Length: 169
Image 1: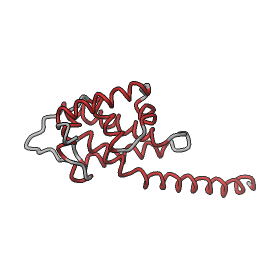
Image 2: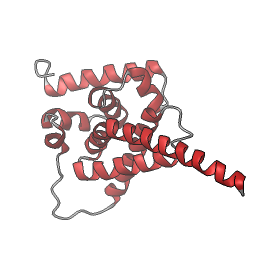
Image 3: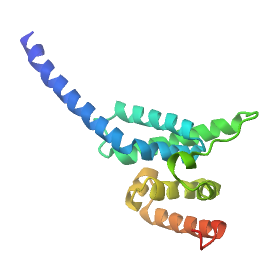
Image 4: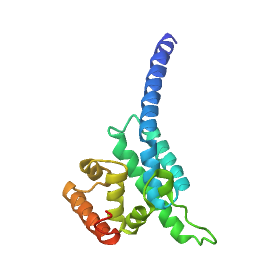
């Protein structure tokens, strides 16, 4: 019985440290993940819900994840893709899409152009320019080779310049 009592305080202390580390990570990354999700799905509200789910899943695996930032963005991307797939199968009546651009301080014209890109390119652009992830980290999030991410980012820039105009980009 004494062994159990001596173990409990140490176990509680470790849990408190993990909670505080996760809380600090959550506070630091919340806006980026929520904005990323909102930009992917076209709704700030749904983006925040998806971000919350991504952080919940990360929290459950917090001790096992060595690099939480790429992990939470990967979860968020997968949740957004699942949401878009489900939304495409639903019939929406009299619903005007919400634009997350004004909520997160992004130019709506630029966001519309990014969302018009193929998904493989729009995700790279959003992770690099909105979430401010370095290219190497994006490669980890998307599980793509570094060269592929660089090429896709370049391709996206070219398409955006043609869509928006070279002077406005």
